[in-house]
Image (cartoon, rainbow, N blue to C red):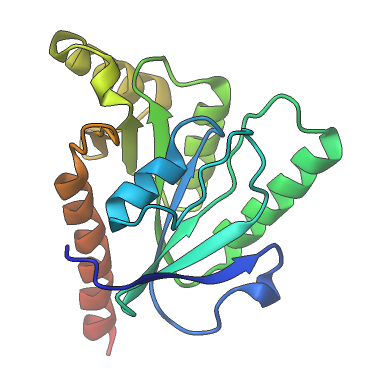
Length: 204
């Protein structure tokens, strides 16, 4: 996809702060140090669309980025940062559940995991959460440049097994450093959006 326009549309904590229209949304979720901001910047070909923080867990808002005035990419706050207080963790959970459970614009959540490691218990919990809301099925394995080609397939199989993914679910290895895997990711995003548009036409 050629991204001609990418801009921050809203920063939200509560539902009333979400954009008030019907544009479809594809959200991204992952641990605080998984490389989500770098991925979003590379995906949109922008250097600073999503701010890369030196302090994991610093971003505690839902950020809505409007793409080509056609749909939105939504940057969900990272999870799994140990230094967060219990109250901050509870706030994160309430914010996430409110968005996942109630946002009609949301079509899918793409979960990011670090390809070098087995998904953590929190990664598994997040994937099960997405399954509960029918938003699962696509996982991006970041930092693919950090392992060899021989390790790649084994790690992808480990991710599938640990998260309990089906054979129809998608795992995409991506490297922000080498900018590989992004065409495949855009194809998945475009398919998600086009499938939803077809369903809406059939309902009419």
